[in-house]
Amino acid sequence: MPVLIQHIDAIARKKGRDALYLEFHPQPFREWREYRFEDDRVRAELLSWLDAHGVPWTRCGPFADPSRMVPYLGQVYLDVPYDEALPGYCALRDYLEHPDGTMRHAGVRFYVMPLDYAMENAAHDEPGFWERWAEDF
Image (cartoon, rainbow, N blue to C red; front, side):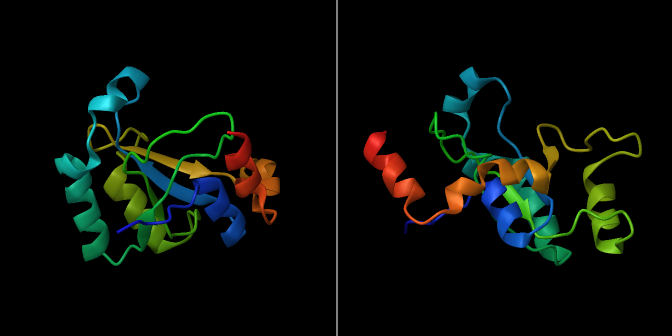
């Protein structure tokens, strides 16, 4: 069944705040072709932890760039505010990162999409933007 996956910058704009997200795919572009998020054991374990701890998440795409089209590679948006004062954020951060900020799980990257950076793509929210883009692609 088809699923509409929002870009992480669109999610940040919709929420009106910075947006947390995870990436699992290999960083070298040449390795993307071989990566299958459905078979990623670390990703599955991490998503199970999120579910078990009541952390809302959904699939998301990368920062939208109309000059290129990239496949969905298993990225997930975490519906938790980026706020060190919130116990929910701290529990998530502590599960994902060591105290020095390095990642606990191989191949996982924990990011924040700053709202001000996401706003650079605000024109993408205008009615018909993506339809016009598709016609010219």
